[in-house]
Length: 237
Image (cartoon, rainbow, N blue to C red):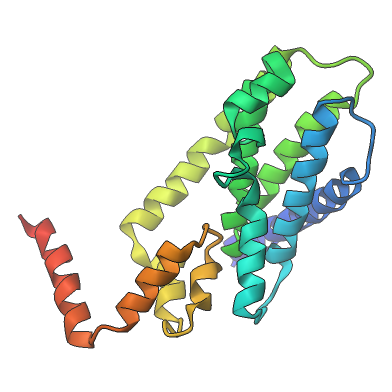
């Protein structure tokens, strides 16, 4: 009983932290506090995090296929081939724009990109600590003088040291205990003939994914079972 009460208190605390982080991030979208070229990065990523928070806060949204496709594209549009050369997700571009800070900002970009999956999977803890990391780096650049590149790298290093073990332990548990795996739960509870299920994970969905899903839907159950058996039986040898 005491453990349950303790878990509930921690959950409420995390919800409060998430709410405060979300509110502050949405303010950053229109702020001009941080000098160029860093301000552009922060406003860009604040919009991204705000959109991810919208997904996080959805209870059981029933969006159309077109709406889901458009939102999925918005999350990934700046790292698509036609945009990658001028994306902060491209380390070369990040270094070109921000010099000695570029590598650190490219790492930060990658961490923020992970919030798309966290939001779709309702991972409150992962979502919150990622948002707080963004805010910590942003705060460092709100000072009158730019922080040292080593200071920014130190913030990122501390984040990894503080949270990496917890994140990895959770991923390993999900890998060995499929009852904990969110993607499996979604698949088992989905109508696979409705391809909207592909957008429940926050991963990029292209014609490859929809094409494979349509192909699998065209197969008989016997064919599906045979394919699954061929794959799983390989692990017995």
